[in-house]
Structures are given as structure tokens and as C-alpha cells.
Image (cartoon, rainbow, N blue to C red; front, top):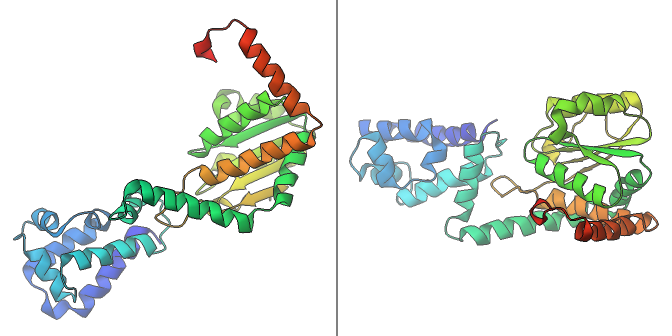
Length: 295
């Protein structure tokens, strides 16, 4: 059920309980609120009244008829349902509004930091060293690593491929080579690793690449959040962890931290391969003569 439907249902229940008290002005206000509850959660009573074409005080009177002390308390009710309604947050505007609601009164930066810290803290209880080691051992023993993330995960996919290449591993960010994806996958073998990243939902392409990897016998790793956890066939190793609760920032901090842990653990178990490659790359970059802006 979508988050806007959750808010609309909560308003609908209120209207049903107090329908005998409502005036024509109340009905016009409620029509505006029901049409766009996300916007309603962000606006004050004067703004909502203006959009409904009624007297500025009408929103206050409506709130009181619905059992609230005033419009601010009524808006807090709408906001609480927006944040805690259990919606799927498929609507980007709803996600943004829910985050702004959480930040209201506490400060935007403080709210974002609290969200990130809370999401990172829960990783301690979900992701264990053995999970990280399963990923790093697969990477260490691979001939080649193909990394794929779509949407917001694409930026992390590119970063993982970059770091693996600098650590001396052959890694390809499939997302940046869409026009050559077939060529990259055609050579896939049991000696390769496919690392999939999926947040919010796994795209059809993720499932298609996973099926090809399974058919070719390649090892598949998946780093997902719970909404995208279902990948068929199941990956050989998967880490699924929340990037934050509904209404929180749900940024890349959590999956990026896990990816960094995997690459760091890889350096600890590959007999110095990563460290030697990083040293050699630093020397090359300093002496290659390429324009510094390219590096």
C-alpha cells in the first residue's frame, strides 16, 4: 500500500467519525488535503485554505471539528501518518516530504546525521565478519569481477570497480558499459564473480544478469536492502541490510561502508596483492606525465 494511500485512509477515518459536523468549507478543505496529503503535511493552515478557496481561518475550524486543538496539531497527525504509515515510498516526492517532516523542528543537518548514525548502528547486529569474508574470498579467487548497480546503486557500482582495479583486480562496472554488456557477459565463466547491488527493488536487468551468471557457473554476490532482497536464483553470497527506516535518509552510507569493509578485508587476505598494486598505481600516477586534471 502506498504512503499517500495510508495518509488518505487516516484522513478518511477522521472524516467518517465527524461527518455530521462538517461544513461545505470543510469539505473543500478536505478535498484539497485528500488529493495531495504529501503537500498537506508540509503546508500551514493558511496555505491549505488558500488552495481550497476558503477563509484563512477555515483550516483551524476544521481541525477543531475533527478533534484537534488547532491546525498545527492536525498537521502533526498528517505528518505522523506520512512517516509511520508503512508505505512503500515508491513515490520520490513522498520520500522527500517524509524526510523534510522528520527534519522539521530538529534541523535538517541534525536529522540527516541522526538518520545515518541510526542506520549504521543496526549494521553491527546484522552484518558479521563472516559475511564480509565470504565476499572478500570470492573476489580474491576470481579471474574477473563484473559489478552492476542501477539507479542510486550505480554510483557505488562505479566506485567498487574503481577500487578493485586500483587494488590489482580486473573489474568492470557493467552500468557504465551498457552498450558492451553482452560482450562482457558472453565471456563469463565459473572463474568470474558478478557483484550485484540493488536498493529499493531489483530491476529486471539485475535478474537477467543473475540468471546468466547462474547458467555460466559464475559466483554471484549481492548487496541489497530488504526491499530488493529477493533475487532469483538466490546469489551465492548475499548481504541484505536496511539503509534506514521509512522517512529517514536511506542514503548510500550503509552499503558503501559494507563495500569498503569487503575491500579492506580483501587487502588483509590476498597476500599483499592489493597493497603492491596500490603502491604501483601511486608511483605510476606520479610519473606517467598525464595531465593532472585527468587523474
